[in-house]
Length: 445
Image (cartoon, rainbow, N blue to C red; front, side):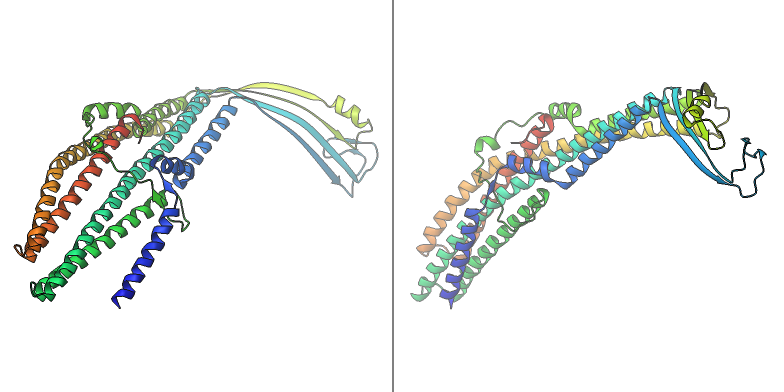
């Protein structure tokens, strides 16, 4: 029965390895480029930018005159009409029960000056378009940051799987050795049961590590908007000691550069500029509005014996005028708008201050994580080396009957823990250093 199970497990492993071998391997830059093209959140932020651009075009068009043409054709029926002057002012030369009137006109209106509200509205919409672009950049940065974190987690998890498989391999060998020792009377069934438990625990560790890796891959595929069942793999990469021990960027230097480049900061600076324009627009409500208008028109009627073209000529009229509107009492609308604009500016200033604090906290956290994990990695290398030498010695002594099963298991547990700690501190150091570089220059590698 055990042979059948073993053969089945080998078959599953071969199928899995074959699928993995045929799967496309994604590099970090490929993941980022694909996400920037396909992520739905980013696409929606780009649509918001296009929508804001339309508002700019509309507000610019308001600077020019409006022009409209109109015509009105009216048919009339008066069954009990008498000759003479009709109620609509036309002299009837004959009794016509059915007649029509036609009018034609072209009108133009132009707001010459309204306290610069139209000009400032254009500026405000331009800032709104810039804000939409900044929000899009913020979304792109957040996506890249999350991708980098998941990518490193996948690489780390893949290495953790290898470590757990090596530990499982050693446990299987110990169990087989224990079975041989039981046959010759050098080991009790209780000690063999402990070896079997160790092997089962290592099998569980392998399965758990593989499940963790699949979960990270699922999250990464979700960011990339990938919904197919095709096997997903990242490009294998084994970070070097030099990458983990590289100098950590200075905290203040990263923060200074981030203040000048991060879109989150620019977004709140943009909000402050919008508030300043809102204040100007509110103040302009108390200023006069000057406009000019002009129109040309003519009309025709069937009650006139002149030809249609003659009527268009004789009835032609044109006019132009200037209008001035001076606000006297606006039911507090201007004062309310001004107060709200000032409140909005104060809120934007507080948001900017808060965002600077959050930015510092984020960068400081990456810096502390990088520093702590780098120090951990230094000590973890020594711990792994010591634990490995100790376990190798314990294994030899166990073969000779000089060490018991408890001591062997303890030595193996210490080795596995040391290897896992070394891997984790190594990958986390590299991740956090890359995040610091990302915040100061906007690039990931």
